[in-house]
Image (cartoon, rainbow, N blue to C red):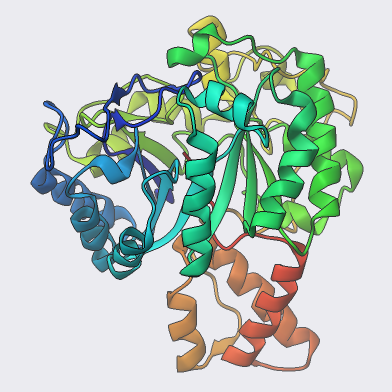
Length: 433
């Protein structure tokens, strides 16, 4: 049985108002002062085609997380209609944006069209560094004004930062900055050298290891205020495990490996389906193929789901099932998405010969399994939880109920567990750009 899709990153358009140095998606830059109203790039999925794809996704999981990103998604004239259609289908819709186009009217419309949260990209506290990285003067100031609008309208947001040699020493300051802005989550992206990113000097493997340890310490420091996570660096779980093998923060992670092709995938503006935004291997185009068919029958996805096929150190590693390395980075370095992740310095066997598992963690996206009775009100509240987190919520809430001598779950018990999770810093959503 194939895994159920849990999250989709959809590059809804190539149109963009920035010229980012690291962009994995060669974007169509437009001057917004001259941008013709209603303009659409040729070849991108039409609104009706987008609706069809959403319906196809819903046949597998109508409660999946849908990240609408770009380019800059707000440059697409029908983005709000697409957001509303997806939300009405049941999908949890979030938007990855640079924040420059956010104003009171836009955010109000986003909220009324089913957008639950936003991911905002910041790469430095220094305007000159950020603007140079993003390719436009005044980019940081414009983004910060957009964040002020999100805060004013109480839309949850996270901050996303790509670590490079330029901002390597700034990351602790960036995390503090994001927390002060009111972000729920800080996602640190580790560069995959694809697209324009091929021209950027990546961190060395030793710098990766140093940054992962720094991030682990920052995760502990901001626990209860903001969730701190690594993206495109699944070996971060090993870092957390080595610091505290039974850390409750591990419960905020999937029990599996690099997600691409396993419970996560990406749709390009033109409709190509790939394992993730940074792994540009198309398994088919959604203009001619059904999403569910590609998800369930792609040879590429099948290979990525079989951890025994991993090569090099990743295939021999005892953390294979809880890390597995970044498949996109392996592909960028070797043209083989099953080869070892060259950014990792770990030598297999330092924690024994047996595969390390996290048995106390409910598998990410697992089908709900009930042991106690749930009241109707509790079940209705559970139905509003994104499907990818529902299994973990059920397990945690039922454990809380048993510990307090109850055989029936109520909304009050769910709130008590939610409060505990909030204090641990586990995020309510995690959009990816």
